Image 1 (spheres, rainbow, N blue to C red):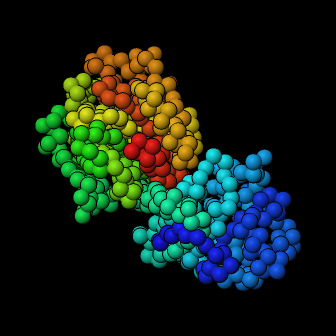
Image 2: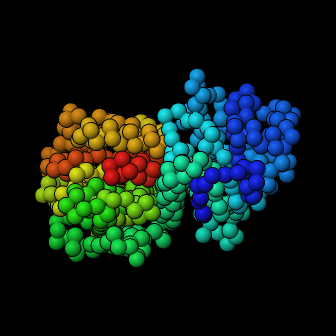
Length: 497
């Protein structure tokens, strides 16, 4: 899709649809008022006839508008502005989200948006352009590669023109680029998450990382095989793969966009491409959704895709621990004890608590890059879903400054997280009579004790853990990967470049 920011003559600009806005109380924006004047008050008449109030999330589509060159006119409701004339961030996002919905039954391909005259509280033109680009790019996503008949295309734009003042063009262009990059990263993460486990194996993920690095001068990819992991002492990670015919992979991505001596930010992703629970077998109902257990890894690859699109001047490392968790005669058994790469021993009381077993070795491996911060991303616990539902990702950190930076990034990107406790009092739940620690801490505070487990392997760096079990995918009629937390991660990188 082509994105352009430029000064826009909304009367003469040819497009399949021109988008303008209206405040609550049917008060037209400056751009909408200009269209109304050119069309001999046609828009005002239509607003009254249809009893359009301009509430946030409302939209009104006019075919063959009088006085302008566009084929259609779309009026978006913004809700009530505050005393300074600014609309809220939430209402602007609601309005922009209506563009795909309103146009999905039309053949509109080239869209001209005139919203630069709208003041959004505490935001600038870069942010506005980013919201429009992100919403439109995400709306084009389809996952129908396994259907004999592709789904109907619906809204499939090919060109967006974002109208703004001449002095705003540079900032708006950057906003469009950022929104597009985030959406493309989310769509890659959604694609990988939605793939079935018989296609998206650890080897597939490794090849996807290599494909991402193809013809890229700043990105290199290295894949460690099981023999190399064994030599490194990654017996915790390998214990998860022991019951699978698919070999585990440790996928290492290095993006070098900064100075050679700049310490990198590291992203560590859980990549369990299918999780049966192992010997601690999960219930059959809903087990198909365990193909989504690699969404942490998918979000790392999606973030790197956005990173390449934005060409950020920084160094970033990605480490993905990829494996299946299957039951067979070689599978790890409850009560088995393994030695992690760090040298710490683990009594595996439940083989379905496998994500932490692959992540702990990945975290230890990450030490070699001397990172300034490390963020691991994992669909780790059902307990986090119970605690936070599907609205916020769970956030744990051993540095309050890092936790606050991630919370801020999530708020800015509309991909929120919520900080959970990481207190020493919870650590004793992981006590084992036979090893340095157990891999589970009982039913109480399951998400917290999982984070406590990981914290034991993250003492040498500033570390945060994102439990995305509730946010990485949706169930039911809208079943599918969401692409979260790619927006949060990209925003964090943007804030720290």
